[in-house]
Length: 103
Image (cartoon, rainbow, N blue to C red; front, side):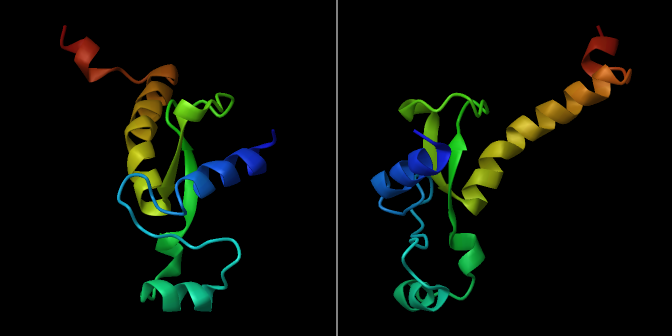
């Protein structure tokens, strides 16, 4: 299946709610105005549902590796991996790893 089909299946399976915080998110058949009326909130961008690859490998689309997360939770989840990637990039460019320097 294609990514749009897989992502839609994950979001539908989660009933368009974040699987981390439980936030209700906008469904594809809802206009922003309908969605705002349904949830009673005024910041619809925070209520977009995404699908995260838990192992950070976009080629691994197995069901146990995909999770429906709102944009806030998805960014929070990915933060730990981005920090590690930045450290690896600095090391690759020749910057000393402080933990190794202390050994």
